[in-house]
Image (cartoon, rainbow, N blue to C red; front, side, top):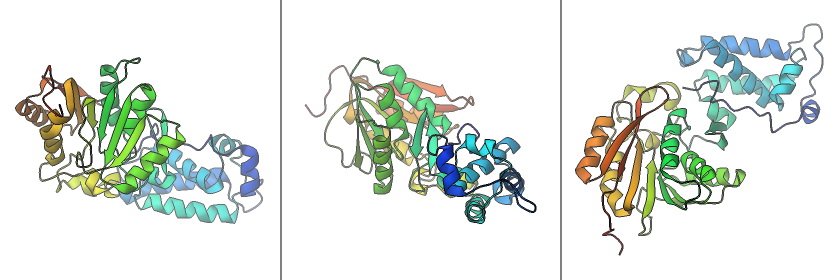
Length: 326
């Protein structure tokens, strides 16, 4: 679900001076609709929309209405607030209605804005990528806890999508060398653009169906937020999930196909005493733990997200000396 904290504004992208020139917005006259009136009307429409029922709180609907108006008018939030009583030009109103209708149809605000904040990073997203969520920051925190700030580390991110997890780790651990894989060429393109925009150079992106295109090598850490929803789960037809790539969400009849595959191959790619970390569904920790134990991984621990749900399970390669690639 999109929240106020997840939304990304465009405050950094457009100056007030540029905005005035672009929009031609002026003081409200008789019979003219102001910016404030426009976003308040949109807030009411968002709250009443059947496609968004149960998704938005009043404060979230207000922020979304304002964000869409910022995009339509080409202004930042500070300018919008300072000129709330200004009239809305016809061109801006037309574009705003187009954007608003997309949201009223249920399309995620992140896709409409083309951005989403994750672990302090302003990331580009598209319908080729999963929308980064706060729950996945639990996986980033778990990874950072095992990587020393001044210690080089080889890291593999499986199913990188927008690059959110790989880039968050890379920024916090600049001595690390990260390879990020995704089967979607379109997703890899988005991830590469994010790395360039953020000037993060210690991540390499490869189009690969899990380990398929990965050269023989070993890692200090493997992380993944794989698809883990059962393919017939009713939640796939609700909220933002309706618009996100199914391949990044669903995995087999019980949602565990991708997780099984990753765990089964993990010891081939983990260095001795290295860690595997997997995000999973709130009710899958027991099954993931069992799969890890069956494969021979040890020191298995499940970590809860900020909502108190069991979200990430980590495990260690017990080997002292590697038996692969030597």
